[in-house]
Image 1 (cartoon, helix red, strand yellow):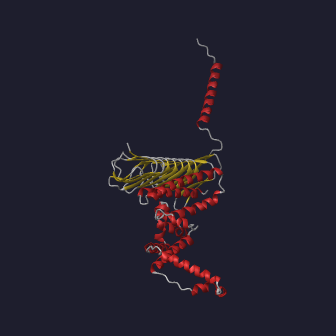
Image 2 (cartoon, helix red, strand yellow; image 1 turned 180 degrees about the vertical axis):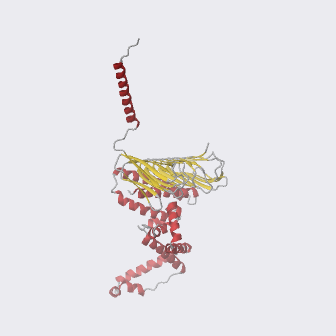
Image 3 (spheres, helix red, strand yellow; image 1 turned 90 degrees about the horizontal axis):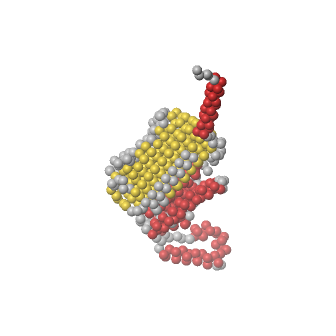
Length: 250
Length: 227
């Protein structure tokens, strides 16, 4: 016959509960440590999916913009720290949403927009990441990288003074794609059947354009003008001190 | 877009849309021009003036012109030093100017006409522009690209406005900005030297243009960031 020792069982259960609570608390603390002084900023704006427009001007920090699930809303989530930065988000009568950061401090944005939105982004220091959009894109970073993926847009203008610029997406027949970096590499990853005319120029870097069988109009180690297919879209790649890579989408 | 903003951008817009303005700005200007007859008329007048100035023939003044001018100056000096000085002073400079007879050849008149047209265009953009570009003799001499002097004037104007505010920035921000501007200027210098050696090389021309565009973008960043 087994003699129960109720007191012992009860105390071991309580101890297990205590340990479990301690572990949960510890995990919660380590999983999302709130940086000292960090604050969040959350706003949503109702927009028309056909005429949605967003402009972001950021001083320091990343800006990530992606196609959101809701085609009638621009949803802005930001986290700011390290200084007295002030975030202002407004919408004008035409529905355009403008987000502007003033003052010092790092602000990291994650923004969801309707896929067809036109966006105009600027950050002095920090990366810009844009995914799965179909509207016109203008992205400018003074010091940081620009990464644009999964695009179906006819107008892309991405440039940085210091940093790398990469673009991956479809090339629409009437499209204009400008990728520039003063001192960084420029990457364009295009579908095999892309139909474009290309202007590529680098002062002191190299060019890897072999992925496409192109017809060359001009070809030197610094400047290339060529076309692929009927040459309908226009692609312009420039870097002063970096290299240029044109690749085929796998 | 308001009329005032369009008018101040018109000169730049006519000079070359790809270099001066973003696509968005160009679209806004064009939309405004289709809806505003006043601004459209001004744009047409400016275009006509620019075209007329461009079509005027360029003439090199004959060497004898300077000889004639120097003789006239010497004659003026000797007259002023002579006994008739008191009478001349009494009638004033306007009287002297009126009493003189000027004769110009057709090429001289054409050069003067072109100069007057340029002054009118510069004057109009100066009146309507927020900060008139500082044109200088050095700039006028240094254009390697057809549009280079205007690009430089525009950049100088924008840089001047930024420099005026720069004293209020902290040292870190100021140093960072200056480093980037210097970096671009150094590259520009190198590429311009190459273009000077091969003025018709399209590749070098494009490189110089791309560097000016990069400088414009950097200045535009600072303006948009409201530093």
